[in-house]
Length: 163
Image 1 (tube, one colour):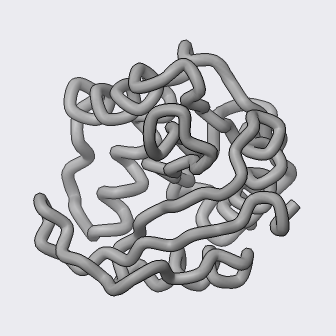
Image 2 (cartoon, helix red, strand yellow):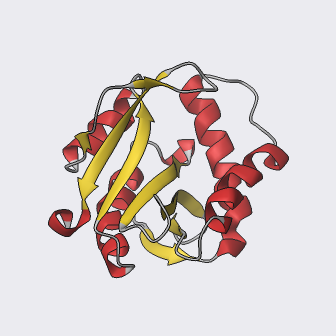
Image 3 (cartoon, helix red, strand yellow):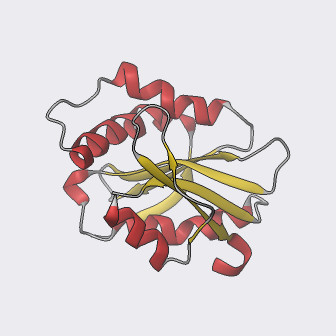
């Protein structure tokens, strides 16, 4: 699958939020997909948190097939926090996640970020393998996610070296 990766506008929040709901339901084996009214505020909160927040899109020409919602980790910080990454379950295994995450360092560097962090459930082995293969390194010990109770690991990437 050929995809185009770019920083996109906030008017694509609904598409990203719907994709997030579908991807998390598929990841967790849930039959029910969260309604847009629940997923939209999650993605929207990232984009509203800072003028430096980014929505990065992976498009296959017809639709959004992947995205990353990113915000500065702290006010005036050179560290970006990747809060949400989602790939449409219909595109799983087609390399969309790899293309998206491989493009992130350059896009972050263009926006003045020097490094990035993200958190991933340790039992999400597909995502863990992807991040580690792209140079992300575990940062600290896993911690319990406050809502899900699942173990979550923080990863860090030096954006300047990963470009």
